[in-house]
Length: 322
Image 1: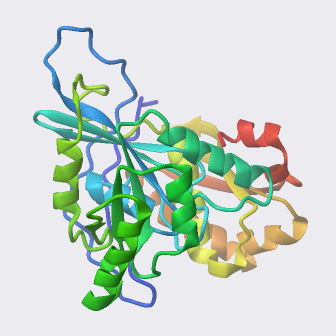
Image 2 (image 1 turned 90 degrees about the horizontal axis):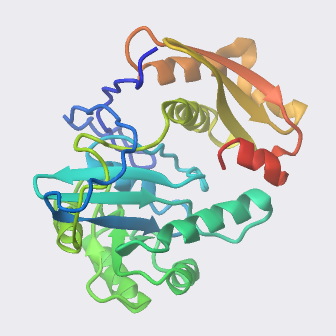
């Protein structure tokens, strides 16, 4: 079994609601390299540090992370609370290394899973060099954004989704974002890439001198099995649209590369049929979409299991990696 899956998936930003898919970016995805400790003191110093992306659900943090890196390391969906764990992306340069952490959206929790997501986001923002508050330029600045800014004070504000609204609306969003405690917010479109190079340059410039915390060539430290399970969950969200409840989780239970067995957990027997689909149509479509993002020859087996109230059980949340 290989140590890693050599992913070769170019990052393709999601299409705007109701629009045609954007063409995939011509980016070759380097291999994912496991975490390695920083080099000993005395090594060649670069500008390096940590950035946390925080914000309400659905403001585009995961899409922004993928756009910054130029490759896909975080799943994306138009449904809230898609991101459930901290996802680390590593941006390497000749004389810099920026470690960007994607976090779950901060929201009003309704149970143990929601509380865990908020704790994960708050914890990830602690101790980083720059906290980036991401807001939705198409949806306007609201009380949720002000709550996040008060909970996790940002060092930089990014106004995302500027491609979805007219210029006047962008200016109004920038004016509103300036009231979040940080002057000069950055307008970007994570979907089209507009403003991303300038944002990346600003982040590099804010990094202090330091070592490379990850080996050159590292893109993320997300374990391969967890990544495959997340791809399955992403495709379930895409295929089932509004029919799929949030009380769903995925986990890899067997790994004998190129064969992977992945369980899909639901809370109710009635939800099982939604995930399977008529004649297994949903599982077939999900499996096909996941394999397209893995190396040739990968075989992903999908099974659906009822695990009642897993989202309300702290111990089971921990076992799932949440």
